Every structure is written in C-alpha cells, then in structure tokens.
Image 1: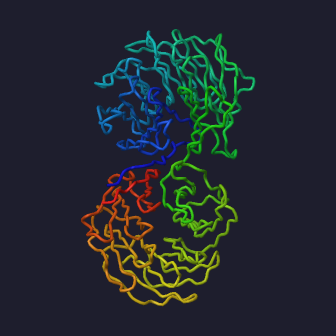
Image 2: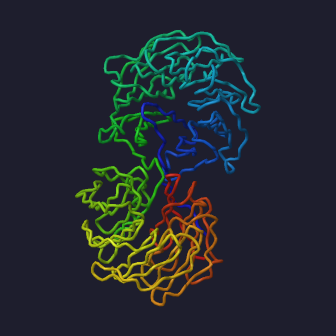
Image 3: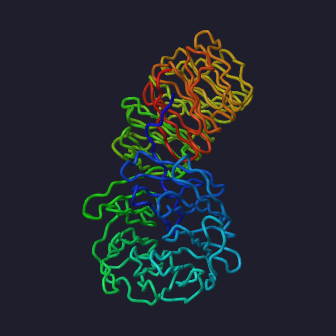
Length: 608
C-alpha cells in the first residue's frame, strides 16, 4: 500500500500585465487557484494538504466556492464552466459553455442559484448570468465593447451585478432578470477587479490607472475613492474586502499591498505591506484575498504570502513552489530530509520533509533545467543551453557558479557518487566525461544515445541507445572501452540507474518496460516489469537497494520489490497529472514523485 503523506503544491499560473482572481471558503479556510488545466484547493491551516481538480480540457482561469461551500464552479480559457462537488471525488454536476472565449471571473449569487461569468467573447457577449442547475440565461448584459475582466454579485437583496473591463467601463445591472442600468466611466485605463462589500452597501473598482473608486451598492452612484496620497505607484490588479466591510486590501504592480480604512465613502491608507522578495519583476503583486484573519497576496512569480490581519506587522508565511512542470528531483544524500526539484523554467527549489517550501536557489543564469543531481554540498544541473552547471549548495544561494559548455545539448547526466567530481553526460552522438567543470573526453559512440549512468566508483558506464540496446564500457582515465552489449528492450532507453549497493542496475524504455540487471553476471535479475501503459520517464532505487520505482507518462508510479515477482508490485495511480517525470526515495519507505502538474507528492509505503 502507498499512502499520500505530504503534498508540495504548485503555485498559481500568472501572466505579466494581468491580475489573477483567487477565492476561498471562510468556513473551511481553504483557497482556490488555477495552474494549467488544474484547479488547486489549499487549506491555509494545513498547507501540506492540497487537492487537485484536473478535469478541464483547457487551461483553468478562475474557480469559486458556492455560498454553502458544497460546490465549486470553475471556468477555463474555452469559455466553459464546470460545477463539481467539494466532496466525493469531485463529482461533476453540470457543465456549460458560457462564453465563446476565455472566462476571467465568475461569482455565485448569494442564494447559490445563479452564476455570473465574464471574459472574452465574440460580438457583444462578454458577460452572462445563468441558473446553475439548468444553464438558462437570467438577463441581458449590454454596454461593454471589450473583454470584461471582472464581475460581482451583490450579496444582499435587491440583487445587482456589476462588471468592469478593458473598455475602462464599470457597468451596473439590476435584476433578476438582469437589465443594463448604467455605465460609469471614472477610470482612465483597464478596470481589473470589482467587488461588493460583504454587507452589500458598497462596491469598489480598481484599475491600471492606479486608482480605486467606491460606489453605492444599491444605486451604483459614485461615493468616493481611495486616497491618492501614499497611493499605489503602479497598476492595481486586485481588491478584496474585510469580512466586516470596513476595510479593503489592494495589490499592485508596484510590489506592495495596501490596507485601506473605508468610511464616509473615502478610503484612507492604514498600512502598506511590502512583499518579502528580491525586488525583481516576479515580486509584482497580481492577486489578493482577505479571508478570516488571513491577508493573502500572490506575486507574479506565484509566491503566496499569508499575512495576519489582526497583526499585519508580523512576518508573512510564504507558500511557494513551481509554476511549470518539474523535470527532475534529487535528494541530498547527507540529509535526506532535503529534497531539491528543478522545473522547466529554470527554477531550483529546496523542500524540507514535514515543512514544505524552504526557499528557491537563486542562480545567476536562469537557463531551463533538464537534469539535476545533488551530492553533499553541491548541485549539478544540465540545461537546454548546452552547459553543465556546478553550484555550491550553501544556504539559499547557489554560490560559486561554475559551468562548462559541452557543445551539444545534454540528454542525461550521471555522477560517480564516490568521486562526485566525475560526471558522465550523454549527448546525441555519444558521451562526455567531465571532471568538475573540465571536459576530460568526448567520445563518439556511433549510435544515437538516449540515456547513461556511471558507476559510483567511476570505473564503468552503461549507455542506452535509441535502438533499445545497453552498451557497457570500462572507464580508464579518459577512455571508454566497450565491454558488452545487452539486448532485452524493445524501445529507446529512457533511464538507467545503479542500485545504491552497486550490485545491480535498472533500465527502462519508451516501450513501457523496465528491467533489473545483475551487475556482475550481466544477467537479467527481474524481468516482465511491463505494467505501465506509456513510456517510462524516470526510475529510482530505495536506499537499501530492495525496491525500484518507475514513473511514467501514464501518470502512475509502480514500485517493485526485487525479491518478489513483478506481479506483486505496488501501483500509485494518478501520482502526477500529465505524467511523472521525477522520482526519488527519501528513505526506505518514502518515495517522492513530481511531474507535469508541477506538484511534488510524498508517498509512504507500507511493507507488503
């Protein structure tokens, strides 16, 4: 049996120049956000627990809890809204095509009967309100000429809907059925977010013109604005009301969040919160939510900061992670509680078992990372820039960046663990032997190379080819001498790994098969490991060499006990949506998996 013990969730997808609208449920203290085609549910009190809804066919854009917390409505870039239950495996209740383009915002009516959605559409249809159970329209929404970025439902009767968008307009509708009442043009740029106060007495709009405007909730008349003194110096992307309707939280491209006191129709600055980052572009703030005693901000880099509303001076809790698919995982051998992960966009993140996010390793050059290996005090990585990087692992910095250009794109990277300065890198035409950041030799092997592994003592290498053959070489100084060729695979070799006790090595291929070999006799030790339904991307050995785990494009992780027939395997279904690309054992009974969904999950294995 394998049980999920910890989840290190991805961060929200963001886009420069646009806000993101996150939402939550005050009763369960959970928040919702989107990344790729996934909707992520995170509990703020237990950040190492996260659930994912991955049923959208297009990138998900916004999600909201129904007023009773039983349902979630989530929307995507195709204009589709799906309504699903928060319990019972997220059972789908309804699905409607609401707009002809991307949906940017949606909200439930306070009685949970209707939903309003806004976004991009053809012609004049940028907003639609409908009954959640039948999909039938509840009004006409004229008055916008461009994409509608945000919409809000008045939480008290009489019901009203307000919308705002790229035409600089704030529109006010009365209903139901909803009819256009008036357009208000007080902003001089895109209006990014609009929200009613929880008591329904007011609503506020915020814009890229750096202003926030306050209106009467019943009539739509303007009653004031946020003070321009100490105001935001950049576009305001999102706004959220305090539960008592007396304050609002705003976030801006100027990298600050501000708390405003709202009274007599005016907004007076109460507190400015600065984002705890390096001050780069990724620290612009693009989303916010005031929920219970939490003030939540989201940066362009995806970092979620949790401030305490009752004590805003207290340092925020930071929840961060990857935004893009995780290409590799490594466990620091000297301290297996430390897990390192690298993603397609060049981020390397450090995690601590039981804690979660522990910092990102800043690299001077943010090249895309393909392979990652860790030994004692050092990280070795290869990227799409033809370089192999060696970074010293001190604190939260990747210090002493050394790199070597090997002239071709690295396919695979393997370190000789007993003499970690020695590394073997595979390229299309052969292999490159490195000592530190010095090329010892480049060997053309005469076949297309797809994977490689070097023995821990550096005396032997196994190289896999496009033809499915495994070539074994003796390494003597800078020369490789072919010793034998093993034929068993029927597809291109994708990964090769030596067992920690070096008595075996395992290989896997694109034709979904894995094989365990005896290192001394070169005989097959475990065969018929053919239980995946798609290519195997990664494999890992348990520290005691008793188990081997494989991860595949089919989203599954399979764990084999070397002493038992493959039929007694343990399968983790749906370990990572979109495919498993990284695997590492943290200890003999804990395996970490990562993949296309930018999640890392830790699985506890119970002895069979």
